[in-house]
Length: 333
Image (tube, rainbow, N blue to C red):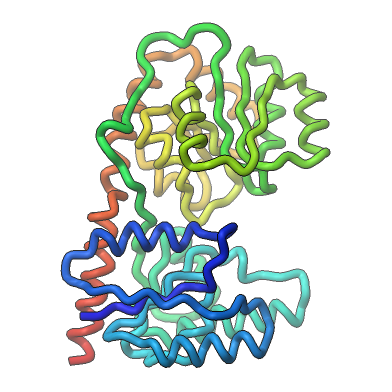
């Protein structure tokens, strides 16, 4: 069985989907993989769209798996042997009415109707897709993202926290909720490491609440891993997520994590995180204070994280994709 993994045009600054499926396909047991990268960045350029669709059509396999982003290529593929993975429905909305119509039609409704099956990365995303597209439930499967977890990477801190606890905040975009976290940290004796570029407004807010922080931008995976190990607690109190990989990164490296009780985050975290209302700064404040003071709770969450991350190993995720490929092959036989 030859699986054509169909990717957007390779761009050095956008590689998360490519890294994800490189890891997953490396764990395949029965599938031979052909990687197909689109020749053009598409956006809404008609020339690029047509040429990418033609290119995808010419490089089909026994199974065609659109790995993300370029959902419109489903329209040029043999639909009965095409699997489409949708990572994020938020990106399929635009403030431009015309662009929004195009995105909804060619990036969502027509592709999901054309594909044999659609996969999403969480049950939350599944419900949103069903509502937005009108396709049947039987056509949509939840297959989560994976994380590479090595036993030697799991290095929890033991004992009470000494000195000034360090909190690691992943992300600075609007949904990452740095504003409410800053308010919640007021009056707490801790230091905040922030990964992601800060706006002037965010810098002013941090200053106004007298938050002791350091900012890290454009860092390598190795540097990010180092920050996880330095940190005592990971904060990922986002307002919405289609998945929430930092939760699993904290689990895998042995750090307690506080995350939100909305969208996909409880689903990803299981019992391996302290859940809070992302809009309730008092609740966030008390949760951080509790986790700083309660050594037993930190240890409990770290132990639960060790078990939780096993659900998302590459081998487990790869097996789910291969089972779906086999289902498609048998239905087409």
